[in-house]
Amino acid sequence: MSISRRTFLGGLAGGAGMSLVGTLATPEASAGRSLEAATASPRAGFDPWIEVDAEALRHNVRVVSTLSGGRPILGVVKNNAYGLGLTVAAPVLEAMDEVVGLAVVKVDAALALRNAGLTKPVLLMALFDTDAGAELIARDVDLALTSDDAPERLSEAEDRAGRRARVHAYLDTGMSRMGMPYHRAPAWYARLAEAGVRIRSSFMGFTEEPDFDREQLRRFVDVARRVRDAGGDPGLLHAASSNAVFHLPEAHLDQVRPGIALFGAYPTDWPAEVSIAKDRAAELRPAVRLRARVVRVERLRAGDTVSYGRNYRAERPVWVATIPAGHTDGVVRESVRGARVLIGERTYPVIGAVSASHHIVEVGDEPTVRVGDVATVLGPDHPDVHPNRIAEVTGRSVYDILMHLHAGLPRVLA
Ligand SMILES: *Cc1c(COP(=O)(O)O)cnc(C)c1O
Image (cartoon, rainbow, N blue to C red):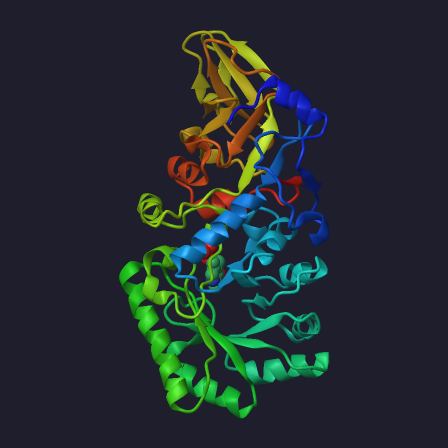
């Protein structure tokens, strides 16, 4: 990919196939367009922005579908769709036939999906109180049952809403975070059945510790068998997040429930996952870019230092460039440990310190970048800026790399 001066100027005139969507974008404004890959940017000005690549999202849905043997996908779009922007990314995912519904962890996110006009099932994977429960039921959001008081909690919300909810049983098979402990679950299902509650699906989350994942799966399937043996119905079974999509095919069950893979990052074991993906001709493509334009290019003298703490000292005269995106925007502070930024066709190392709104790269002996050039901090365009590479060199989780992209930055859907 090359971003020339010409595409910069062309971009200023308004690039083809790009749309600027804010957090209040309607799905009509953002979904279903057939747009080119974002190889140029329409953004003028020096504020950073985030590009969401709809075709990459669609590609990743197809990849996950392939890897999970065509199972229906319940797409997890929590935490602002992993940083991409909930109302930007979710409509693109929802429009895919492979995606049967979406799942979130916060009430506001569930309501935001309905406010954005999405119509497929939305599951709130969290405890609800009566007020929120009633509103969610009224807005046709599916609820998770997680606790001993689920029958009473549900009936209060249903009474308040004046209608029945669609509900799903959340089981704890060893995560010890949310859900009904598996060893008490059979009796709990019996009480729910007595209360006339129909369970649409039962689900659990893995610890992602390989041997224990298998034990968790055994516990889960065993509960479902015992419920059925007792004449009950646990509904569909789902357990696989992205990690199990790659590493635990026996956990694909009735549907899969991935998040991060849909957005184009490998979940936990990057080199292994890339080789699994290559084997199946199913490589993920990062669907997000963090970009900004270079605001300053200067030549340091030998001995000059860079940024807070003076962690970088020029040994000899050297050119440096400032990029106006910092840790509040989602550039992790640990980028100084070896992350690189793509400008034009080359990548340059982050030096000194990442401050709130800026970071600085070493350009070298020649001023090969210019003020106004587009810098790609994160994206699919070069291996050095792939989210998994950034996670690797910074020692941060790839989940942090995506989810810490600032929700307030403008989103451009390409
Ligand atoms: C976050 C989450 C997922 C998706 O996890 P990924 O690792 O992003 O695929 C699935 N299920 C639950 C309960 C979650 O909290």
